[in-house]
Image (cartoon, rainbow, N blue to C red):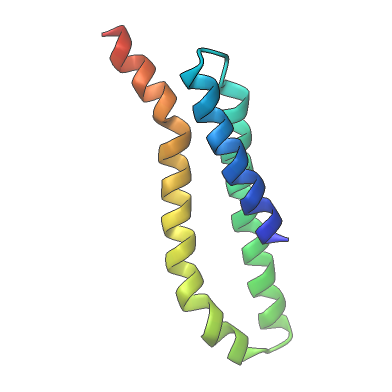
Amino acid sequence: MWVILVGIAIVITFLNLYLYSIGKDYKLAMALGLSFTTLTLCAEYSLVSDWVDAEDWSALMDVVPGMERALWFLTIAFILLNITPILLERKRKR
């Protein structure tokens, strides 16, 4: 499930940047991009929670250390990409 959500988050984030570049209203796309990023994190947390409930320690040891770094990186990247239009708009107004 988290793979689908991150795919949607990627598409909407780039849609956000595209809408800004052509001068259209991008704020709904920005909100959706950040929302799907959050849903991705929730889905990943649910997956890890299921592994803990099943006491699947080998899955936790194999996946969680690498996914932690990837999720931190992707979350920070998505936040920065989604707020870039707002930052550029503020810079242009000055």
